[in-house]
Image 1 (tube, helix red, strand yellow):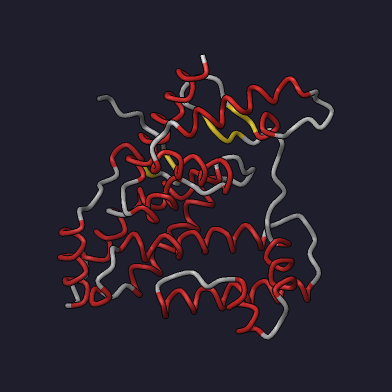
Image 2 (cartoon, helix red, strand yellow):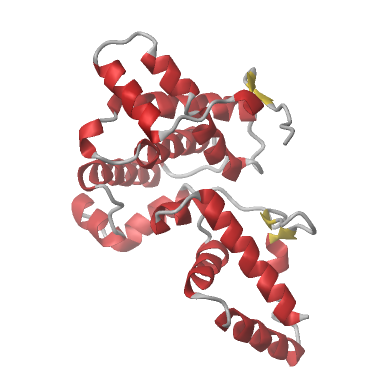
Length: 258
């Protein structure tokens, strides 16, 4: 299959090597032993991990070259701090660090003005989340963050929400190779009459015909708003498998609703 050349920061993404878990284990062992080339091989072998994370920011106006370089900083931090003795996949460890680096860059360059006290609380909450994740290997709940920082749950939610970027109504949320579905397509028209009720009931009935995993993926993707990578980590499967299951579920719904 022909691969298309796409360059970001001078890197031809079509030629990026992807390392296997076994190859990365060997390279991390060499890095620990002082091999001067192992670090560079680990960086080059994980650039696609950075690119996969940047896909969720494709709608941003920021220069993708800049975001790629910021993501690479997160990758470097992950490589320098990764410990094989923890017995977790490197991607599991690296994704939060790369994502965090990109989000910090976007927050610092956000045009929306946020009060200093609210921003400080948000950064404290993010730092507490990172510390908790590094210690326990999972995300803390809002209640746990509130107790840790000695503030109310409302204050935590309000602070974290203040750092979220406004979402355009023309934000694409799905594209299966045909017509793109935008956010405004999913916004309910309160003035619409009840003729849509039958259609909504038909959709609900069709969804019930899907298997549990397909229902879970559609719910997490389009109701909760999680990315395919986040769902893949939760289900312990690959992002490609999530993508295939999602497309299969949507295709099944289309056939049942014809």
